[in-house]
Amino acid sequence: MAPFKTDQEKFWAGKFGTEYIQRNQGDRLLASNLAFFSKALGAAHEVSSCVEFGANIGMNLKALRLLHPDMHLYGIEINTAAATQLAQAIGSENCIQGSILEITPPECDLALIKGVLIHINPDALPDVYDKLAAATRRWLLVAEYYNPSPVSIPYRDHDDRLFKRDFAGEIMERHPSFRLVDYGFAYRRDPQFPQDDITWFLMEKKG
Image 1 (cartoon, rainbow, N blue to C red):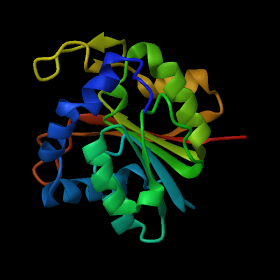
Image 2 (cartoon, rainbow, N blue to C red):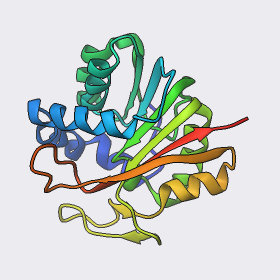
Image 3 (cartoon, helix red, strand yellow):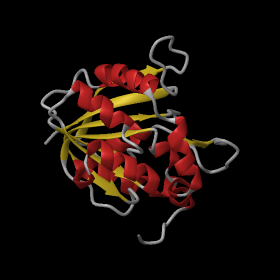
Image 4 (cartoon, one colour):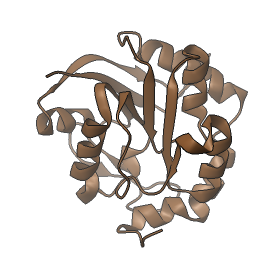
């Protein structure tokens, strides 16, 4: 694997990224993801394939498989330990190990990124936006921390590892072929199906 361009890539490819696995798995998370995608993708139709950017061990893709058993799933993951488990979940032929900044994603009906853009070096975001746009034939689901203006906040005692901004707005400004179809908020204190205070945006690619 080529040397990483950013400190954020090194961070997630290394020990911290491996430890993240243990905090983000289990039946409760799967149930919350099922509820989340049922709502966030409610307006999307004719979705037979999906590629997830930063899939970790595949908790999001496992939920999508339960909701859409015939959907063809791909996942991109930078951390070796996570990618190993992801390959077991969706098949090694569908698992792409490497940095989002380096890979060429497959083209699918739906491109998904959830809780990943917030951890990418802001200087690299335009390239990631372009990759997301290229990866989808029609639908794009972005689910991240939202802030109307860019801001960096401490993340588990680390600086420059978590960034909030209007990711969806920036994508639509950079790629005018996308239009907003639906959006919403998932609250960490939801009594049944909590998520991590994420705001989601479903966009459709036109033309």
